[in-house]
Image (cartoon, rainbow, N blue to C red; front, side, top):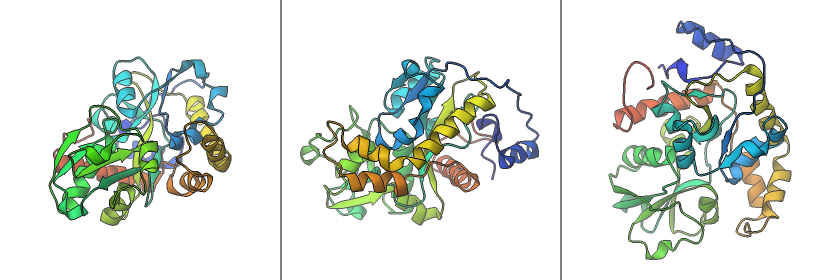
Length: 301
């Protein structure tokens, strides 16, 4: 299967280089440099390891924090240069965007922070309220409902992104799709729950990529700029427990324990974007097309 090599930015590894060459794609050579790019970041715990020391190359004065959905809007408008956005957004606009290679937010089994929380048994779900903050997960849950659970509920989108204080007990929907820190806060709140990372693994046997650094239309990311993102990831992975402890110690994060945050960053979340993760991404794209959630064609659009 071909996920459209044009979606990946300047290659930094042998696999990517060979994959591009096999499809006759000649990438533009970008001079080695690091420019003051405007970055879009997501204010979730799972993003913090990717930001560790990144301000040494990209000053925080050029960072903008928002939900994945909002960052997608800003990226489309050219108001930011590179953003941590939903992989669905990258697939949807593959003719314009480039994924920065080597870095992603994904899982290879339970992810914990992306889940379908239900008041009724999963097979009995009739209505689902989707978190407005989500794009990839909002589409993934539809695939899992149809292929894994064999149900076809009605889906609605929340007016605002879910927060831990949202009164889900009075909401009329059978289930809620929740992402990010709110999903972690609600991890044990509902009687029934489908972890979307585990659901995808059960359905396909592959890892899942939820988000990645994506460059706006017309921007070619240099090797030095790519390496800055990769080095930040490596620092973050090496210091994941310290990052978790720091997060738990901040005001407003009393809902998560130190042990839970550490396990989440060191075990649940995977930050690499290698060949295996790309296979999962390709299959996700194929299923999106099959379920008419994404347009088809010879290459990603």
